[in-house]
Amino acid sequence: MKTVFHFPTRILFGEGALDDMPPHLSALGLKRPLVVTDRGLMSTDLPERIVGLLRSSKFEPATFYKID
View 1 (cartoon, rainbow, N blue to C red):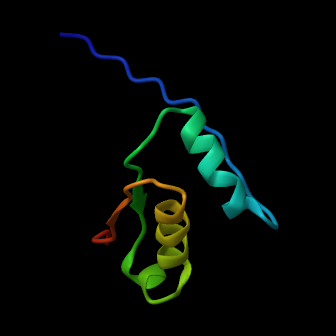
View 2: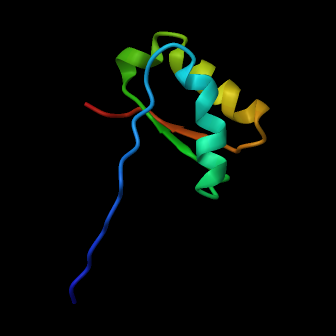
View 3: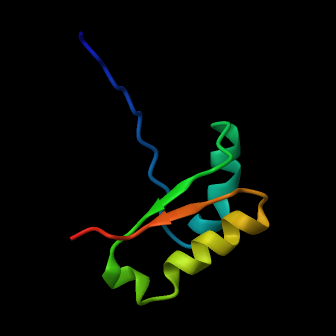
């Protein structure tokens, strides 16, 4: 069985980029985004800021950080 995945990539960066994320996710029809990070970044406030922003924008995010 042949399977093909195609994921076009959009990268948002720079000042204010986090605030631009919820409208882009909504445009994709997402409701439960997955925040993937590592243990090093989990020791900062960035993942929680992202999750907080997503929750305040009515998303139901999950976080995965067990990456070596």
